[in-house]
Amino acid sequence: MRLLKALLLGLPLLAVVSATAAASTSSGNFGWDVGITDNARYGEWFFGVLMWIISGIVIFVFGLMLYIMVRFRESKNPVPSKTTHNTLIEIIWTVVPVLILLALVAPSFKSLFDQDIIPETELTVKVKGYTWHWQYEYVGMEDQVEEIISTPLSREDAIAQGREYLLATTAPLVIPSDTAIEFLVTSDRNLHSFSMDPFWLKVDAIPDRINHTWTKVDAGAEGTYYGQCAELCGINHYFMPIEIRVVTRSDFDKFVASGGDLASLPVETNDLGIQTAALEK
Image (tube, rainbow, N blue to C red; front, side, top):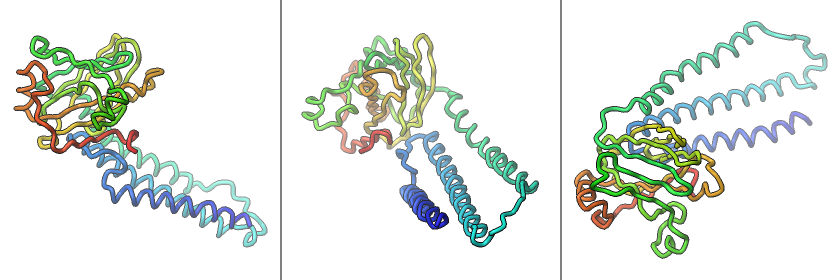
């Protein structure tokens, strides 16, 4: 009876895990947004590898449990074994996990280094989190483009414009594609986190401290992308969306020449509207 209950509980769970892994694999991105930077694509590949390893471990453990429950069930072993340990098995279950972790060191460190080591960049953007909005400033272009104050659209304005409430903002950050961009990130008073999944970009915004990261969006990936503060920054945490408009370099130059007039940008014909996985409906 206990074996039957264990099977009834364990097998459906194993089926759900396997189905989830299969569905994630068929989608190609394991629930993450489609990456539009080299770092994002590498991260997606690495998460795919981790998903296969985790799925294999889960299937192996459940299979081992099933074997033990069947092979050593009470009806077949009225006199239980008094074995207390097995040296070979203990070595195996210690060494194998260590080898798996060591095999993951190189790719995980590569991902960290690729984000942390900033190459020569062509544009620097200062990002500052306030209570409750984001402020963007193009370093070295202050006399050409004023700082951008980006606050979420009200529910009424979002509905009127046919845009997503708590994703769309009054003024997006505009950046060029195929351009290495450095972000200097800080905060006014609260702890925030500047996060944009499609760029594989996430960095804490800390008062009185400047953190930096970088990105380079693929040419041809122009569009509007959405992110969100990834830090529980306070009562209006949900009121800190991030909207970034990626345009071609020529369109960005026109934007700068116009003094930061959003009307100078071309009308989007393919609003990608990619948003963080946590905000997907």
